[in-house]
Amino acid sequence: MRSVTRTAALVIGAVALPAALAVAVRARSGPDDPRISVGAAPPATLLPGDVRDPAGRMIAGAVWTGLTAYDGRGGTPVDAAAESITSRDRRVWTIRLRPGQRFHDGSAVTARSFVDAWRAVLREGWHGARLLTDVARVKGAGGRDDDVEGLKVRDERTFEVALDRPFNGFPALLADPAFLPLPDAVLRSRDWASYARRPIGNGPYRVRSHDARETVLEPRDGRGPAIVVRAMPDAGAQYRAVRAGELDVATAVPPDKHASMDADFRGRHLSVPGRTATYLAFPEWEERFAAPALRHALSMAIDRRAVAEGPLGHQVSPADALVPPGIALGRREGQCRACVHDGAAAAAALADAGGLDGPVTLWYEAGAGDDAWVRAVADQWRSTLKLDVRPKAVPAAELRRALAERRVDGPYAVRSAAAYPAPAAALAPLPRPDDGPAADLIEQSLRAATPDDGVIPARLAESSLLRDMPVMPLWCRHDHLVWSERVRGVTADAFAGLVLPRLRATD
Image (cartoon, rainbow, N blue to C red):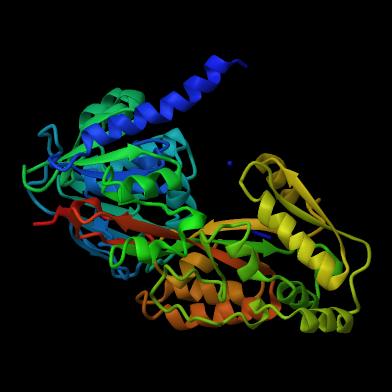
């Protein structure tokens, strides 16, 4: 199996702090303020190779220009810093940079700016390292030293990347922040902490200031508005601030405003299909869960819409396929018939499969925010299938060990994000038998001559997985945006997030 977070004075202070923040926001966001303000959860880091959240990806997309880029409109990324990305066998790729590119400090963007940055990602064990080792599978990328066999600089503007196997999705993967360049000064100093506080990129926006409250970006060429990304983790606060004219764009909408969003922001709201999905997987070593009919019964007993609209507060869409809706290439809707809630059919299917005796342990990661939906699914299985369901929350490291040691004895929660916009990118990380037909079909999809040629084997792989159901889709994350009348050009997709350089003030 591949497996794939005392006194009255204190009370007064707690009330006064949000009020003070609101006044500060209002003071900086009045009608005469030429800057465009965006509310978002604070990014975990601005170090590009370690970016791990939507806010970090959003800011990175403005501050850096990668080899390829997502344009916020879905589909295949386009060349950006790269003049060309070519390969005869999809295993060895030659990347040629556009001439004359500079970082914000004036230093040149060279082939080594990329190659040495990737080596740093691997050496430091940053969040993006997995994309180099497990997704791209760069030759020799498993170690923690600078000698990576698959990375070769050919000249100032050209470098070569050798992979362990043919991979048609490599150019699309290069749009991820893990593959962004770093200037020579920080590569030599390795002072990552200082750099993360005031990063120097090569993109259309530069970081003017960054602290726990906000990140201020200014256009590199002086054209376009300055953008202030405010640290506002509370979706309700963002929503209210936009309605009050104190914020221009909210990147989250609270559950209680889902129904009124259109009335409050007619023509100024957007739902963005996501790339992240939640699944339940079955341990292949547990014979009691081996029958596909039994797995289908468990799936049909889950009312996904009720969970999405209840415990998950309209922040997800019920899954009807294994591939998330944020992937436009080759995705088909309605592929998972067993994802349609039908309690009577679920009970009959479970009986036909011989039933399920004894307790059912539902494993999930402690602290990952899954408690509410796990309890809801457990209750549905109890009421519909009369099962003795016992949720079990364990720390992430313990869950990984339990899976590796085959101690997991029931369904377990899996959250997976596609690394690039192709169906195989969503299917490849999912738990499944290594020797089944789906594994071969996914490999065929990855090795196909083009991403388009990989669609048919990926579809066949999805059909095979849904038939045997080693993993069942539950729901897919989506984002909501609302904005004020002050701005236009609000564009977003599952991989780029909100595209900051497209934002403009209304005339």
